[in-house]
Image (cartoon, rainbow, N blue to C red):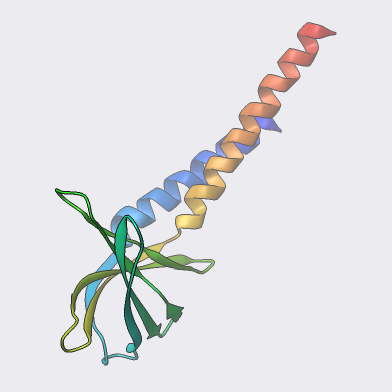
Length: 142
């Protein structure tokens, strides 16, 4: 049983990783096209950073990606990633650029197929290894 789980895990991991590598899609999305609509664009501030938040309606659902501008010197811009998962793929969205004067946001989009197979394969391999080694530990102790 543990060996079967290990082998199944390797198969799922291989299929998932190969799918991600070969079939990942990426594109730049300009809002107000292809079913994408900017619902709100706002800026907030706290003691350490400014936060730009875009509320966007996508064909996959409503997202709220953010860009953080830290007040320390140097490279201070960090974008968050919004993920809309499905069984067969994950949709990743982040803010690529924006124009506050004209309320324009451009998104970067990635569609990653079969990423769940990578996680399932990793979990199966871990479970198989734990079962395999726990059986040896109990035999040694008993």
